[in-house]
Image (cartoon, rainbow, N blue to C red; front, side, top):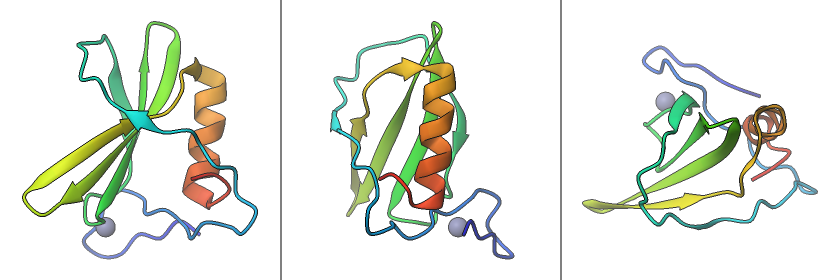
Length: 96
Ligand SMILES: [Zn+2]
C-alpha cells in the first residue's frame, strides 16, 4: 500500500479504506512547542502528514498545500505508542 517511486524518498498514503477511522483535526494554533517531526509523508502530494513527538506525547500534523499558501491542522495528542499506531494506520489507509 505504501509506494515509493523513483524520485520520492518518503512514503505516500494508501487510499483511505471505506471503514477507516476518522481522526479529529483542528487548526494549529502555531504555538511554539518542543516537538519534532520524526516521520513524514512525501511532499509531492498536496497533503503532507508529519508524525510529531515531544514531551512524552505525540500527534499528527496535516499540512494542506494550497495555491501559494498552506493550511496546518493537528490531531489530538496521544501517548507516543498510540501516536505511532495511528501513524501506521494513517499510512495504510485505516485512518485519515
Ligand atoms: Zn512522492
